[in-house]
Image (cartoon, rainbow, N blue to C red; front, top):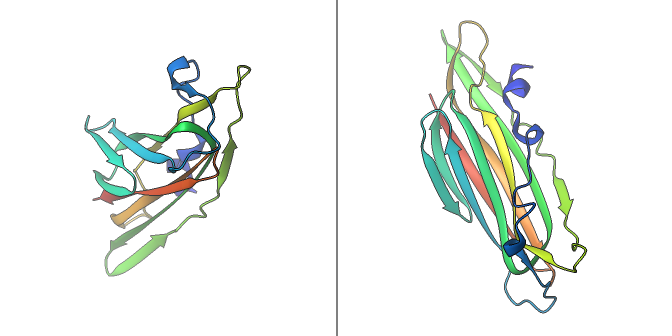
Length: 171
């Protein structure tokens, strides 16, 4: 299915900061504050970069190629990351329409242990890369759609935070 071809979100995931010693901390099981979440949307087509703290939304054009960096931050250490996403879009023309999605938002859980020195990540990020070139049936034109990315982080005090990034794809 063409939509699945365009939806390469979770198949090109990379962990950043794998050698960042300054991103390590002593885990704090008495931490009183939940993690924070930030997103960086890098539109490879337009060259625009947008930063979002917590939940928010961005608008891009149909056909843009995006790289999104999603990060969980906690001075007391990040213990676990959960992520999911879905997409949907509509096409129309000649008095008829077509809807695709929403897709199934499968939750991916990433448990983060301690390193050999007993240290935890204070910042843990994932990359997501995909194209917004949703494909319509012959004779129909793309009219609206988007993605929803969800991220949750848990610290060593079992406090968690979650955020959603909505990507509106304009024709």
